[in-house]
Image (cartoon, rainbow, N blue to C red; front, side, top):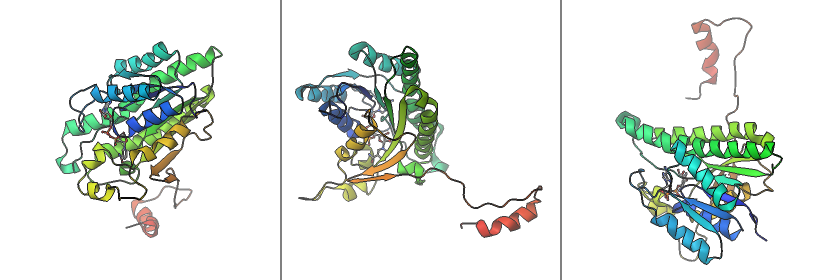
Length: 291
Ligand SMILES: NC(=O)c1ccc[n+]([C@@H]2O[C@H](COP(=O)([O-])OP(=O)(O)OC[C@H]3O[C@@H](n4cnc5c(N)ncnc54)[C@H](O)[C@@H]3O)[C@@H](O)[C@H]2O)c1
């Protein structure tokens, strides 16, 4: 028996990289899968449905069920069509994995408006729009007495959570996604929907484009391949299962390591029952400075 037997899943950006591995594992674990991917380049330009079609073919060879969807996940109507594709083809939707993403790395002083806008759009709106349509469907089902465990899995990055220079657009979007997931978790628990986030580390087209990383990620003969993107998928499948015990959490995952990420928390403080002058505040805060 598979961990996802009988469940219907959408995986965005599943034509290659991490999404492809998630789709193949989900199918092996018994899910029927909508393989979404518009098939663009690393920077989001262009379209090509071939990679998504190949994943669907691979799933069919495994004896599984899958369909292709080529909608842009950051397009409002496209995201609605994506959710409807699962419901119309497989009769329901249990799981949405928001995974699709692009990169436009640049140091802040050289970044142009389109590099900011496109990255924020694909990641943040590309998480919001499909989640919004899935949540509306799940609320409707719940109100009709057809509620049951449903799962959202989002994709963040240590580039944002731990502030990587050269990626202010991507990092802001990826940290926003982790916060989005926490808020969604609180809003949707009443409909039996869980929302969690992964911050993966793996060898894919995206990371291979980062200078210096290709050498670090090269698999060594006869040893566990720490950077194989397939290593990330079991956690995503668990978070997508009806038995998932978590909601509102973010997990780092790479190789055999899975680490819970601590959220923002309050630190040291100064406090009094009257307004501070600027000078008084400067003096009181001085011992708290980290640099
Ligand atoms: N690989 C890593 O180590 C790593 C680290 C941190 C975060 N991530 C995140 O993991 C996710 C998957 O990335 P990957 O490394 O597998 O990269 P990838 O480039 O191999 O796969 C991303 C896929 O998303 C698709 N896509 C892009 N924009 C889309 C859109 N608007 N609509 C539909 N599909 C779209 C692309 O066509 C591509 O196939 C991304 O969100 C990425 O930011 C990856």
